[in-house]
Image (tube, rainbow, N blue to C red):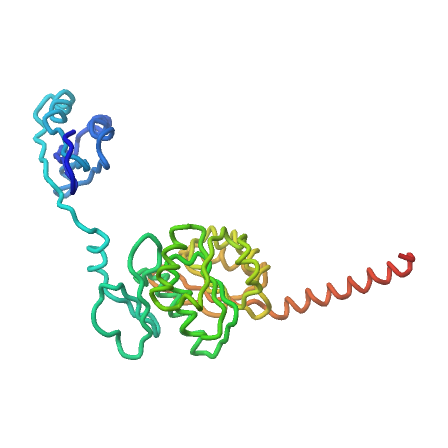
Amino acid sequence: MRATTGGLWAVRFDLPAATPPLLLAAIENVFEPFALSVSRFERRGGAQWRIEATFDVEPDAPAFARSLHAILKRDPKLAVRRIPQRNWLAEIARQMPGVRAGRFFVHGSHVAGPSPRGTVALTVDPGLAFGTGHHETTAGCLRALDRLARRGRRFRSVLDLGCGTGVLAMAVAHLWDDASVLAADNDPAAVTVAREAIAANDLARRIRTARSEGYRAAAVREGAPYDLVIANILAGPLIALADGLGRHTKPGSVAVLAGLLRAQEQAILEAHARVGFRLIDRRLEGDWPILVLEKSARRSRQRKTVTVKDKRRLQGESRRSGR
């Protein structure tokens, strides 16, 4: 390799689609010890394979050509090109317009001009954490929160679990100005991104952040019981955390759950029914259901009555035994 600074380099060449898999693997192995990445994809309607390797220094094309010639028994006809330096995050940002979801308009700092009339603007730049509003689950959760507010629901203690950028926690802070809001994630990078985004939106005094595996962190436990929990994560973690949701909420509490596919919906509902939650709202955003559940007050009262009866029975037994 030849040392150089700035940008990337790419080496690519084409092979017939009928090239045996073992030969393709041997060719890719020529590049893998030296390349940042090695990719293979179809061209010309599946008639060809293109193999492309990228490097952060100028590749020694003649040396690669000799190695490939020994495998192919012919000139591989390598094409070498310089990939200019670019701010890929900025490139992505420029291609991402603002998103309107309910009363919210979520946009990156690159979006110029005023927000649409009647919207609440939330500035979230694309980066290392999930939640710019462009994915259906994020937009769907924003709409679900907006519907809850329009129906007159009030919440005082709110947890955004798996907060990503913190955009849902920020929406809550705008909808319920007297709510105590905690944004938590198990990814330290996401917590950092959320903290920065919350500060950029002038909400640092309203929203706390914490790193937490589920409900384990002290800050999460101390904030319970919650009357609203938002979890836009994945189906597996939603099921695994259902018991924790039951323990950290109170009768009448609401949970907004997302990140699941339609095929996973029944398993999610069954797991949460076991801890007293029933479905009160469901909307599809593409292939992604957004579920709004409420914790049954009746179930909790029954459990409390049994507890009081048990306590009285034990007290009576204690008096009779002279303890």
